[in-house]
Image (cartoon, rainbow, N blue to C red; front, side):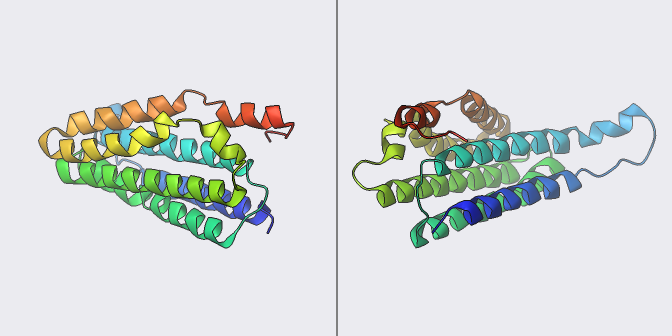
Length: 197
C-alpha cells in the first residue's frame, strides 16, 4: 500500500486537533487589557499543546519518509497515535480552565505519556516492516530522546499531585528538548540518496 493516504489523513487529523484547541480560547467580555488576565492559563496551555502537536506532526512527517510501504499494522499503530493526540484539546482545555491544578495537570501528563508510547509503537512497527536493514532503525540509533520522554512524562504525572508547577516545568522542558532540530532521519535519507521531502 502507498503511504499518501496515511499521510494525508494524519495531516488532516492534526490540523483539526489544532483547530479544536484554538476554539477553546473564548473571547473575553470587556474591552480592557485586564480582562485577558483570566485567559493566561488557557492561552499558556494552548501554546504548549500547539507546540507538542507541531512536534508530533514534524517527526511523523520525517518518520514516514523512511517507510517504503504501509502495512495493516502500521495503519493501526498510526490510528493509535492519532487517538491519543485527539485527546490533546480536552486535556489542554481542562488544565487551562483549572489553572494547572493537580488532577488536570496529571491527566495532561497521562495523555502526553500515552502519545509518546503510541509514537514509539508506530516507530517500531515501521522498523519491523522494513526488515533487518531498516533505514529508520539506523537513523534512530540509541534514540535517547524517544526512550527517556515517556519516563519523564510518568515522573511529571506523579509530581503533579505534589507540585503542579514542577510537572508543568517538565512538560515545557521536554517540549524544548524536542524542538531542537533532530536531523537523524534527514541524514539517513541523504546518505541513501532519498529525498527528505
